[in-house]
Structure formats: C-alpha cells, structure tokens
Amino acid sequence: MSLERPLDLPDSPSFEPGLRPLSGVEPGTEVLSRRGYIRAADLKPGEDVITRDRGLCRILSITRVQARSRVVRFASHALGEDCPDRAVILPARQAVLVRDWRALARHDRHAARVAAISLTDGILITDAGMTEGNWLQIWLDAPSVLYLRGLEVVSAHGFDDHMQPKL
Image (cartoon, rainbow, N blue to C red; front, side, top):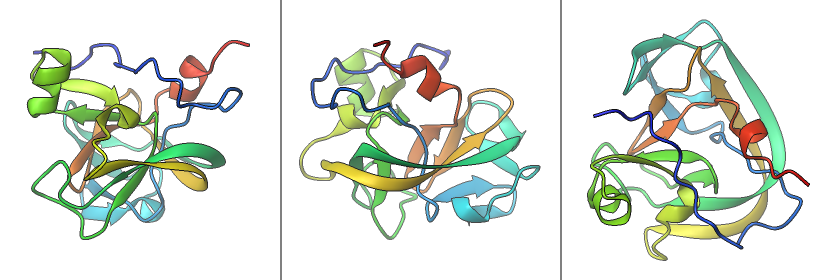
C-alpha cells in the first residue's frame, strides 16, 4: 500500500480569506529522533529523525515561522497509544497520517494523509480558533511522516507554497 496519495483537504469555509495555509509543529512538541523523543526546538540540521515511510532521515533544515493561523488541539490520547502527557496543537492544515477507523470511514483507505482540521470531533480533537503561533517546519530531503507522541505528521514539503490560494 502506498502512502504517497494526494493530501485530502476539506473544502471548508472555516479558513479566513487572505490567510496563508501553514504547516509545522510547536517548539515543545516531541519528535522521534535517533536519540529518542526530542523537543522540536532542540533538533538541529544534520540530526536524524525516524520516519514511518523512509526510516532514518537527516534533517536538512528547520524553519521558524511566526504566523496567525487556525489551529487544532489534539487532547492527549486523542489518536494513539504512545501519547504525550499534554495536548498537541497543530496548524489546521498540517497534514496528519491517520491509520484507524477514521481513514477507512472517511476516505475508504486503511491510511490517509489529511488536514488536521478534518479530524475535529468537538471532544478530543477540537478547532481551537485563530491564534498567533510560533511554528517549526522540519525539512527533510523528501516529504516523510514524522512521529510525534501519539500523532504522525508530514514533514515540511513545500506545503505552504503549494496550498496558498491564488488571488
């Protein structure tokens, strides 16, 4: 089964016009690296992260972006067993890999890459509204699925430029 399918993004009016879609993780979010789970802010270019689809991958660069975005709050234990002890906040259009009933029920696949906003259930995964955030984008040599505690997200991959609406 290939995970290289197009990103399933909802046609949602919940995004304010003129705001650029954004991907990234908060600096305190833990990412699985060769050294174990490390805060994203403590990762450095040249360090290896463990990816779901490509194994060990070297970080080419890490971009810090401060931007206003709609965000989604994942309560601890929302999607997985290896869960963080605190909620994870992601930009609404951050690509998340789901491999549970959600992928099968909503996308008729065993695994699907979807925008975080499409997973909201109003209980464990909630739309936390618009906020100014500080995001880290982890760049690898090709888009890959990174392990966060309890979540799997797609690394930075030209997402912002590709998804920006043409005005």
